[in-house]
Image (cartoon, rainbow, N blue to C red; front, side, top):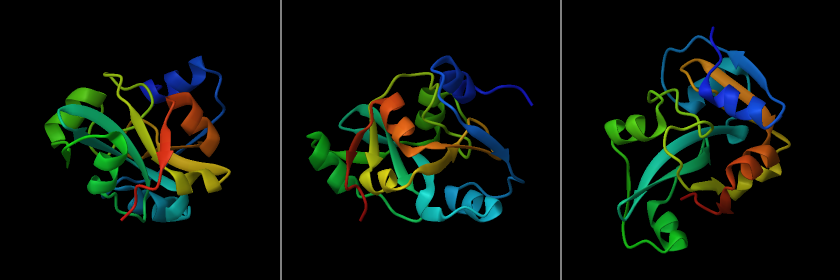
Amino acid sequence: MSVTLAQRFLEERKIPYEGREYDFRVKGAEYASEALGWPPEAMIKTLVAVLDKDLTLVLMPADREMSLKNLARLAGAKAARMATVEEAQKATGYLVGGISPFGTKKTMPVWMEESLLSFDTVGINGGRRGFIIFLKASAVQSSLAARTAHLSI
């Protein structure tokens, strides 16, 4: 398989990672977690939200739901909603089910659920369906300049 934009992003910054493929059948980080035998609380799903009119990426554990209300309050936004499939794909350059926060088409602010930093290593989509990248949680946060907060319901 060809190198993804996410891999290129990490390699250009000399961030070590391990890529693992799995049989993609259902979109979602929980399915990837199960398929790879990785704890869902340490598997990141990449969500695209709209704060007022601006797109933002939100990194959440696979087993948790994001609070749009918390996100809006923390970001100082009046309104928050999930991006449509079309908005998410256009902004990231990735297909839903294969969205990675690394190497997105449009640069967006990134928010990260703080509980993810309690893990040394996390899994996150590598830029295509059926491909997960494992790397240090701290590297995810620092490479994306992600703001961390309690974002779960």
